[in-house]
Image 1 (cartoon, rainbow, N blue to C red):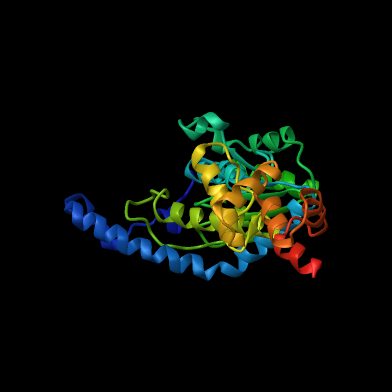
Image 2 (cartoon, one colour):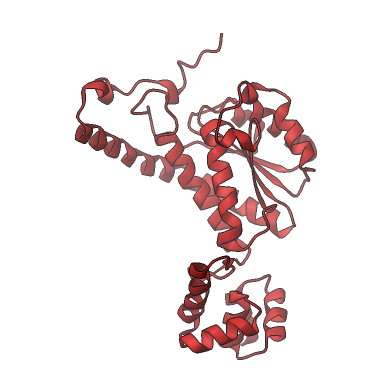
Length: 300
C-alpha cells in the first residue's frame, strides 16, 4: 500500500486542527497567514528557478518547446500557464504546451487512474514528437506521480532537458530530472489539499519560468508586452498604449505606425525609435533575435 504519511504535503497543520469550528474571518485569517509562507518557500528555490529559465530560453531559441506535464491541480496549472502564452506573448500554441494525465478533458473532470499510468506520459510525448531541443517540466505537489515519471524517463532517453516542480524534498520525480525545484510551503490548512499553498507556490514559479523565458527570447521591451496579440478591442487599445509608453509618441502616430507595421507592436516601436521603415525595422529585429533593446543598441 502506498505510504503518503512521510510527505510534507500530506501532514497535518497544527494551527488548523479546529478548522471546522472557526468563523469565516478566522478561516480567512489563518489561510492568509499560511499563504505568507509560500513566498518565503519560493524565495528559497530562486537559483533553481533561474537555471530552468535559462534552459527554457535556450530551448526556445533552438526552436524547441516548453512542455509541462502533471496530473490533477498540477496538470491544470501547467495547462493554464501554457494557454496564457499565445495571447500575452504572441507565441504559437505549440511553443508552450501543457499535458495533463487523462487529456484536456481532465482539466474539468478527473479521469480515473490516468495519473497512475506508467506508460501514458511517454505516449503523450511520443504523440507530440518530442525532440531533444524541447524541455520537459514535470509538476506534482507530491513528487511521485507515475504519469509524470513515465514522461521524464522517456525525455531523458530522447536527450532533452528535464526539470521538476514539486513540494516535497528528495522526491521520486527528482531522481529522473536534471534539476529539481522544491519549494516547501509546509502542511496545508486543509490536510492534503495541495491546491492551496502547494498550488500557489507552483503557480508563482510557473509565472516566473514562462515570463522569464519570454523575456529571454525578446518578447518584452522594458516591461511591456510588445508581442501581445490583438484579438479584441481592449487588446487593440492596449497595443496602441504600449507603443505610446515605449516611445513617448502621441496617440495618432502610434495608431498610424501600428497600421504601417501590419499590427506588429514590436515593429512599430522599432520604426519610431530608429526612424526607419517597416522592412528596416524587421531586418534589425531579426538581426537582434527579436530584442528591441538590442536592435536599438546595435544601430548606434
